[in-house]
Length: 113
Length: 111
Image (cartoon, rainbow over all chains, first blue to last red):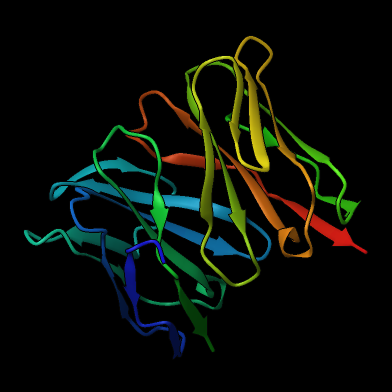
C-alpha cells in the first residue's frame, strides 16, 4: 500500500458525460501527478500540482481539468467523454515538486460506453 | 522527442538472472526510475538513478550511463512473482517532476 488513495475504483459512464476522479496523496506529500494508462499508449503524464499550484502540464486534453485543494487532495475532471477516454487513471504523489520517487495510487478504471 | 526505448517482452527461467535495458534521449536528463507493474495494478517504485553507476537493492540492481543514455535493471534469483511489466521512466529538466515512461517490458518467468 503506497498511502495514496483514489476513488472510485471503477467508473462506467456514457459518452458525453462528465466525471470526477479523486485522489488523496500520502501524508506529507505536497505534489500530486495525474497519469492516464491505456492499452495502446502506456502511461502518459497529464498534469502536476504542487501545494495547490499547477506545476507542469502534459498532453492533457482541453476537456480535462484538475485542481489541488488546500487539504492537498486533488480532483481530475473529465468532460464530454469519448470512447477513447476509457483507461486507467493513476494519481501519484511525492514530497516536493522537484524530487524523486513518485508513489502511485491504485487507480480508477474508467469505461466509457 | 523524449523517446524512451525498452524491449517489449522478455522470458526468463525461475532462479536465473535477467537484464532489462532502457535507452533514452540524453538532452535535459534529470533522473531515471524503474517501476514494476502487475496487470491492472499501480506501478510500484523499484529504483532511482541520477549518477552513473550501479545501485543495488536486494535482488534488484539498476545501472546508469548518462553519456550513453542507457540504463538497465538487473533482476537476480528470479521468482514467479517477478512476472510483471517493468517500466523505465525519465525525468527531464524543465518539466516539473513529471515522468516520461517507456512502454514497459513484459517479463515472463517460467519454471
